[in-house]
Amino acid sequence: MKAGQASKTAETAAAFRASHTLYAEPRILEDSYALSLTGWYWRLALSNRFTHWLIFNRLLKRLSPVIAQVVVRSRYAEDNLATAMKRGIDQYVIISAGLDSFSLRRPQSETSTLRILELDHPDTQASKRARLQHLNVPLPTTLEFVGIDFECQSISTALAVSGYRRGAPAFFSWLGTTHYLTHQATTGTLLSIAEYAAPGSEIVLDYSVPPESLDADKHPELRLVAKLAEQMGEPLIGAIEPSVLHSAVTAMGYDILEDLSGEDQDARYFFDRRDRLSPTSACRLLHLRLKSDSHATCSIGA
Image (cartoon, rainbow, N blue to C red; front, side, top):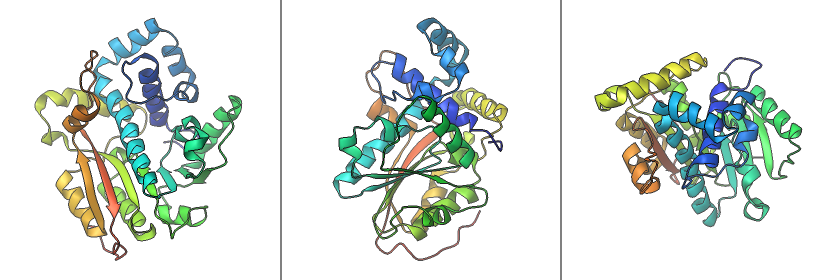
């Protein structure tokens, strides 16, 4: 993203969630704030069924698997958060929160005991807060914005000056970001969490696999997504083989609870749909938990 501007990919992701909420049936995720949070050009495109059909069913038709992936990653994270809360976790850290609206759309009765910390670049946070203020949307008392410049700050540095309780386990979500980071940056962030978070903490993240590991018929879809990201100034550089990532996180002290392929996501969330919506095979969903003896430091290679 560019200094002084909110992330364009965050706006696009919000638009994809809004499109799904307004026009998909059945819905994987309902995000009633997504439309208001995104830019005016997306709001215009989503304003009625004809313009939506023209933009999303014609011009952006090949991005349908990416739209599915955007909504399913949030649904997956929130499903696992709900399970973690039942076993006593009461801190939720949203890394690179962008225009996420979890704290706004959940009933107060469900989140009154859940401390929510949104970590993101100060420019993105300022843009989001200005939009919410313009919409006269009150912020929950349990929500804290934590500014972080990922290029020069670690997760632990940002959390150290927040209301985060280091001695208690937390649930982390890190969605839509690793695709734009180097392997070293991704593993470095995961190591920072492993060294700082309490045992029993969990994290859900999504990541891309290299194009050569996919069938050739998926390559045009990937090239289109890569071109779009490049045009928005946020190129895709973060593809990683699952076996490589698994080895890295295991060395950090994480247990791998689940790693869902695109096909796994399709079977769990997208069965029996008339619109044939299905997530991209290029992205996987990874669910980790820190072991009780996870605080040994380690170095991660390229």
